[in-house]
Length: 277
Image 1 (cartoon, rainbow, N blue to C red):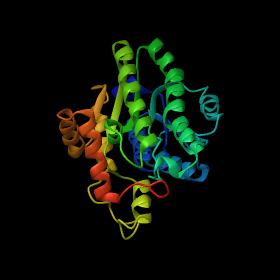
Image 2 (spheres, helix red, strand yellow):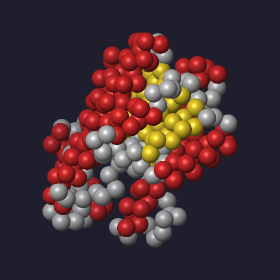
Image 3 (cartoon, one colour):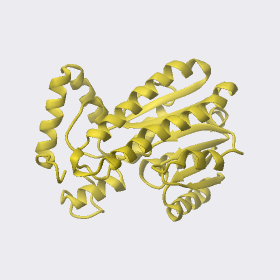
Image 4 (cartoon, rainbow, N blue to C red):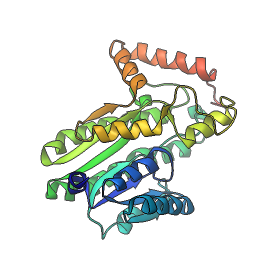
């Protein structure tokens, strides 16, 4: 625990920390002796998560409630952590709860997704990485998705944004890992989170929000994999199914990979169209 805190402390900024893997990641960081600044949209939820983490770990917490799609989001986060020495940045925001065709929504919805998934992540990495390099220690963990591996229906912009996150993080690793800063891209497959349960419940794929979606990796497994590989960047495929899928994709051409994703999506969700995903 002391070694972890020396490497990544005294504060971590966890973006997307209100539930799911973000909240679990923040708690594991706190259990390892690092204080956490929790960033998400819903203030009351953040306060509940922060109180629980403080009670269970004894770590100090801070909450920053901000909509990551807002133009001022980055400035709000930076201003509210300006007095902290941040040794770790974790960016696990950026899911797409809609899973709809590209033309089903106005282009502004796609623009908001790009801001949240790509632009804010990039801006925060630039801000917090510089002092990490100066100190010769620190860590950056960016969550991406198996959707980054090939284009598919109902996730046109989401998949593209996660491909950006993946390549950006890999590139950042090439520049920072020999300067004492660990950089890791976590590539998640289907993961049991509140957002996934809500999506599958709305689509009639699970009978209640208490049901675990079929084939979903427990969020705790994601956190275990992440913490076991923080210094083993640049990229980690999380869970056995994701690692298997990555091996399959290696043997395919780009066209074959896209067709495979398209067929799998249709088999699971039905055909895509311009109205409903």
